Image (cartoon, rainbow, N blue to C red):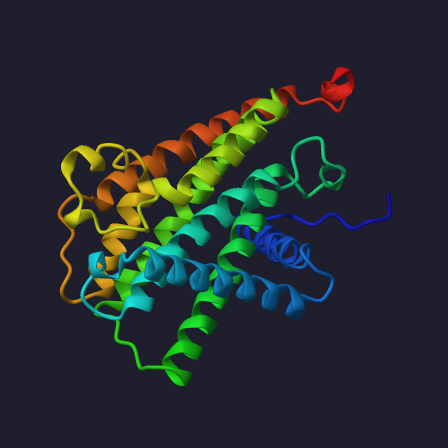
Amino acid sequence: MFRPAVRKSSARSAFAMLELIFHATVRSVRRTHGNAIIGLLLNILQTVIMVVVFYVMFDLLGLRGNAVRGDFLLYVMSGIFMFITHTKAMGAVVGSDGPTSPMMKHSPMNPIIAIAAAALGALYTQILSAGVVLFVYHAAFTPITIHDPVGAFSMLLLAWGTGVAIGMVFKAAMPWQPEFFGIFSTVYQRANMIASGKMFVANATPTYILAYFTWNPLFHIIDQARGFIFLNYNPHYSSIRYAVTIMIICIVIGLMGEFYTRKHASSSWGAKR
């Protein structure tokens, strides 16, 4: 009643939304652990453990000869970083606050801001984790050389973008059938352990086997990333355009589904489940 009327311009509204996304992103990053530093260290430790496990597995199975000519551990990390970034981004978006969440009762908040915050939080933690692991390996063990750092980082962003896009599709469909789409999203994430193609080189794989992997945008991203990382590798069976196309299509479908779900969402949907 006694609050002065303030005319909101487009610039003021945009800055207010960016500020809200920033604070929601900080909340998303701190959600895994009360202490932000410990949460980031746990994420770095998870990345290191996965790299070590795959390194040992490659060594025991005798698959080192099938890798790209160059630093073998960098070859392993190239697939692990893309896979974790894609999976974490998708999981963060699927697990973000929905239209019936208590956070949506606060006037400026909406599901799109929650999705953006979860996605940016996942991107921040993965870039920091990858940077720390690469720096420690470069400084403490052996110097590494990335042929095209800008292209390799672009593939990391594309892995994140496709994860966000696919996560938005699952996020929009989740309120309609939580059990089915929850299981389906988990199956997709687990299937990418193999379907992403991070365990082999596409150029050295028979065509009849590649047919089982080329549907996956993450397969194309990992193969193209190795082309940017290693001087002696030129990918022939993958395409950046395919991954970008899938990302754009999934974002459009996810946004349409999110706006439709928001209009029909109800807190009593799960009452009979």
